[in-house]
Image 1 (cartoon, rainbow over the protein chains, first blue to last red):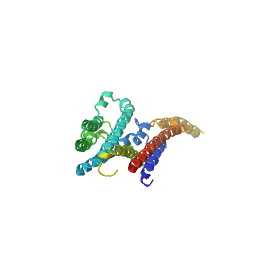
Image 2: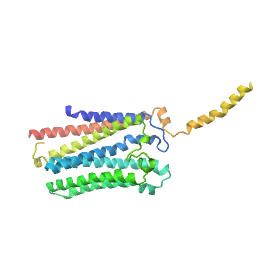
Image 3: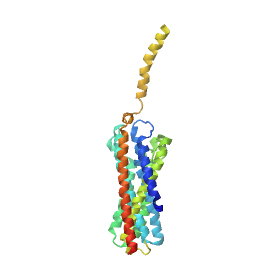
Image 4: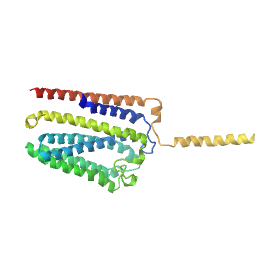
Length: 234
Length: 73
């Protein structure tokens, strides 16, 4: 039970997120209206994805340092859950776009498709998709782990230009791009007041811990399945 | 007397303007909040969240049991 406290923390934070996220007052803004509450859910998916990809990246480096198969399992499953959260972030973003970018501001669907933040996020997710294709195509365990680790480092490095830097350089409808003048490429700080921050940061931690929990389950299952390949004890 | 009349007319003329000024703010789900039904949405989401966590926790228990078995074997 001692090692499981963070799972309870995750649950508590997410209950708090839903409670406060739906009921607490939010800034009254045009176009956004109540959809500003999506900040506690949509944006958290991307934050959690970044953190899980970061963990996966660290394990890939660890793998290349000692070639321990266990680290490859960690890297693979953290990347998988991270990609899943990224897809959820993309899907929820698509819903949010349909009421804030397309109808209210008179943007056409075509201009949304040219949106650099969306293209960047799609590229980032596809690069991670290729990571799994690459792994799946190699049957030799050591080769798969080695090439996978090197590719994973490249994929993590590509995240930064594709979702942080390029949308910041060119005009974007997404909050944080040049037109919105907040300088933050993920969310518009001017739209958030302190009471929202009180919900948003716990929400990020809660969703991230849930992602880590699910990834750890996948890792443990894989460690059991590949018990014979591991030199060290499970 | 005429002064009171003047004030009354002024109030009558200005009051509707104040009302429209309030209504012109960004639209929020105030109606939903005032009749209390938003709590049902919160309850539904919390139920789903509880179910999700119970499911993940049960998987966790199952995997822990498998780990224990494999260590014993």
